[in-house]
Image (cartoon, rainbow, N blue to C red):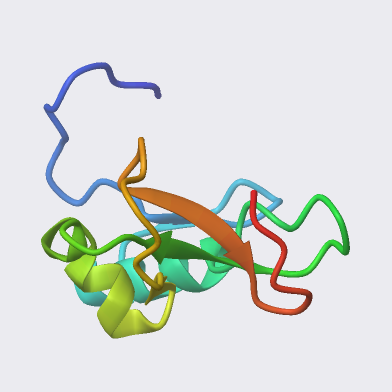
Amino acid sequence: MILGGCIEPVDFPHWECPDGHEWTGDEDEWTVALTDVLSGRPHCRFCGGPTNFLVYPGAEELFLDELARGDAEMAQPRGARPAHWRRICRSCRALS
């Protein structure tokens, strides 16, 4: 079943195995699992390593959760930036 919009049935399954078995779980457990799967994505286009958000001063409040989880880090202020964030490789430190 595919739903559009924000309406979700009660006990909507969060998990599904390759054989099609579905089950629900605790919302916090679901958030942790999803965050773990997506952590570091997209990967660095240079070395393939995981990436973090690089958050520029003044945009910290937009990325509080990511900063707290370690999925983001503060950039050093170097003049005005056109965007609030970029991505930085955790391994080779390349910007994307």
